[in-house]
Length: 213
Image 1 (cartoon, one colour):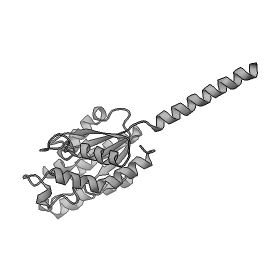
Image 2 (cartoon, rainbow, N blue to C red; image 1 turned 60 degrees about the horizontal axis):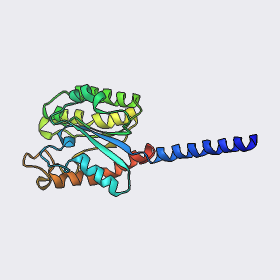
Image 3 (cartoon, one colour; image 1 turned 45 degrees about the horizontal axis):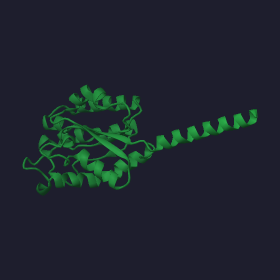
Image 4 (tube, rainbow, N blue to C red; image 1 turned 135 degrees about the vertical axis):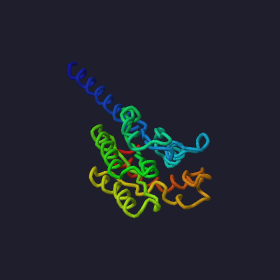
């Protein structure tokens, strides 16, 4: 009789463990898009922004994900660093870090932008949150020296923190008026779709590297 009770208890424990593992595997993979107006969806309607379109694209490929929009129009790396802790909630598995464009447009020293991005990456690493670093490139009119210094920030930090780098967030959109709003800076809905299409493989790799969705 004692053996039967022990066997039953072991079976219940086994089923409970299996259920917990199954539940963990089925848990939604939480992603935060953390950036400026390019992430926030400046000038776009509901459902047209980067995080919404990325979430739709990932779900269409079978990923159980939720992509939160933590973009703030006009944000610099300094602003991002100041709000990082409360903008990225516990339970976040991946942050797509897209900041630096406004630093560049304002001519902020690349050293300051790099220091802020470095601090953000350090904080996220300490919290054991994976990061996909989305790079930015300086406008040529800022001069060759500034351009060289600014553009080097992202690959250097990606190497330092061993995080994947998507070299240029606006790849395929910058310089294409048909994919931009009238301001010539922000993507229109078609531009957002172009960004999502290009960055999607990098996001999927980052998801797989952190255990999948």
